[in-house]
Structure formats: structure tokens, C-alpha cells
Length: 266
Image (cartoon, rainbow, N blue to C red; front, side):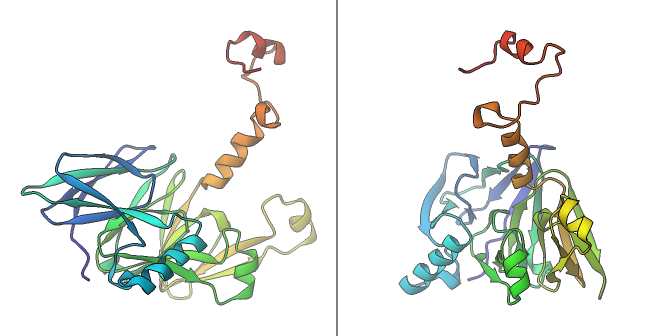
């Protein structure tokens, strides 16, 4: 099944959304919880799996749903179709501050590997599967796990990142060492492995983790400056209601000032 060809426009800076223009009978598939708005005339349908050619038949649908469970995603996805004459638009938003990255799979050898929570939406016909690591070290110490998402097909896909996005073209044999949580995705030609930081002081007192990822070219890699897991940890650590340490608002009165600021829940 050839993927539908869609036109798109990305809006915003730090809180972005992508607007996709659908011709008659075109469709786009999206992850649950990413829908923002759509024009009248677009039909929304919840499906089991991703609706690609790799997901046809009952057995393939069950297998596809099982793969999605392994990545921590919902069993179901949503497809948006334009069933009327004339072009119609539908929009999807990034779930947290960062950037939306368009991936043209025809320029990536028909396959792109990304973090299991990075996928946003794609042309109808793009297959969303899983990529297993064959290396024990990467599986045990990969930080985000040895299971990543695999996007396959000949259309457009959109992934989202946290913070600022860094894109780098790696040459043959060129290496880039990255925090495991900061990887957004990479071409299928890039080799991904886990490396020990080394050194007693680095291991015990470094505070940056014991392992980091090594990406070896050739291919394109995308890195994010603020993984959502890191942002969530900082927020939880500063929430006194959740037994975190209250950072205060900068008042010299400290806790007494917080009692007077009118934003307290007892």
C-alpha cells in the first residue's frame, strides 16, 4: 500500500503544531492524544494497529497491536480521512515544549528509527513498528530501553522532540556520543550502541549516568536538548505537594512569603 502524499505546514516556535492538508480520499494516521482541530468534512476513524499493508488481516492486526504494547503506546490509532470534494485541513500538536520534525521516508531509504514516544503522525500507509536491539548491552543499559519505534514506507512522518533540536549528518565511521535520553531518532544506516563512561569518579559522582549512546555513521541523527523525562523529574522534584523540595519564588521571606502569595493548596 503506497502512502498518501500530503501537504503540510508547521506553526509556532516552542509549542508547535503541524497543519496537514488532505486532498479528497487522502488520510493521515496519528498517535492517540495528538489531535488538535480539523475542518468540517474530515472523517475520524479509530483503528486497531496502524492500517498499513503490514497490518492487514486479523493475525497481523493482533501482532501489530502487541508490538505497540511493547512500546508503551495504545492498542489503537486514529485515522483522519477527507471524504468530500475539495481540500481539507487537520492539525496535530506536540504534547510538550519542543519541535516537530518532518521526516521524508523516501529520502531515508524508506525507514527511520526513533524513540518510542517520539512519533506524532504520518501519511496513511506508513507502517509504525518496533526496532529490537540485538545487542545485550544496549538492551540492558540503553536508558530508554532496547525497543525503539520503526517508521517504514514512502510517505511523510512527523516526530516531536523536547527543547531545541540538533541535526547532524554523520560521515562513514564518524561517531557521536550522546546521553541516551537525548536521542530523537536516526537513519536506519546509523549504528546505535551503548558505551560505558569509565572512571571511578565519573561513575560514582558524575551524576550523568554510567552509560551513554554511541551513534556511528553514515546517516542523519536528531538530538533533543530536553527529554520529557528530564523535564518531568525537575518538575516533580520542585513540587512540595508531591514531597519534592520547594524551590520558592525568590522571596526573602521564603516559606512565609509562599503563605501570602495566594497560590497554596492545603
